[in-house]
Image 1 (cartoon, rainbow, N blue to C red):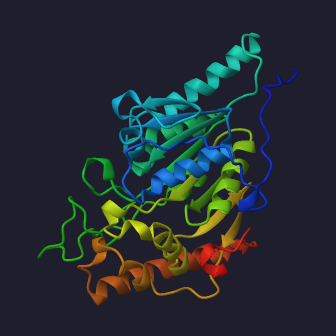
Image 2 (tube, rainbow, N blue to C red):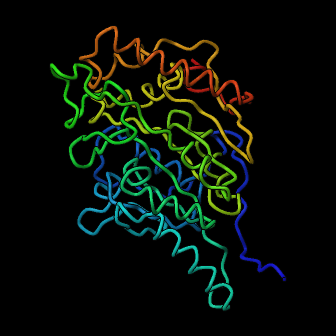
Length: 330
C-alpha cells in the first residue's frame, strides 16, 4: 500500500545561540511570576518549533497565567485542554489533520503538534491520556514542563516533588520533619518502559537553552510520539530570588539533581556531564523549600542522587555539550 505524504516538517539543528531563530512565537504581555521557569521554557520551545505549530495547553500555570481575560501571548495556534485530557486533545488534533490532508481539504505542512503540560498534567492527573497518546502512536510531541509542584493552586506536592520539600501538603513537623517523605516519579522511564512505539525521549533544562531547543527540534522531526521532560525552576514554589532562576537550573545539573540525556532507539546518550559533581547541599541551600532539612535528610538525598547518576552512567555514553553555558564561559 502506498504511504501517504503528510508533508512532515524537518527542522534543522541550531548550531549556536546566535543562529537561533529571531522570530518570537511566545510574546510579552502574560501574567507569569517574575523569573518564571516554565514561561522561559515556553518561549524557547515555541522559538524552536516555529510558526507552523499548534500548542495544546492543559490546565496549569502556563494556562492560567497565559490566558487571563481572553488574552494569550502565543503567535501560533493554541488550545486549552483539561488537566486530565491533554494527550487526548493532542491525539484528536493530530488525527484530524491527517484526515483533512488525505481528503485534500488541507494542503499545507503537517503542523508541529505539541502538548505542553505540567507535571500534574503529564504524570499524575493527566497520565492516562498521555500514555494513551503514546500507545496509539500519534505523531506529536508531549512535553512535561516540570516545576515539581502544583504551583498554580498553591504549591501542593506532585508526583515529581523532590524528597524533603516543604509544600502546603507536606509541611515539616514532628511526625515528618523532612516534609515530603517520598521520592519522585521518573517520567522519562514511565514513557520508555511502557510504550513500544516511542523512539525518542529526552530531558532538558532551561539553563541550557541550545540543548533544549535542539531536543525540541529532534523530537518534532521523529515520526510518531515523542516525550521531553524539562526542568523549570519556580521562584514562588521553590522559594528563591527570581533573578537566580537560571543559576538554580545549572546547579540542579551540576549536583546531579537533574540529569540531561537522550534515549534514542533504545540507546542512552548523556548530553551534559559535569567534570565533578557538586554536593546536593549546594543546590538545596539556596531554596527555602529545603531550609528545614537536617544533615541526615540531605545525606539521604545525596545517596539517592548518587545511585541515580551511577545507574544512568552505566547505560549511557557521553556526548559533547553543544555550547558552553554562560557560567562556563565566564
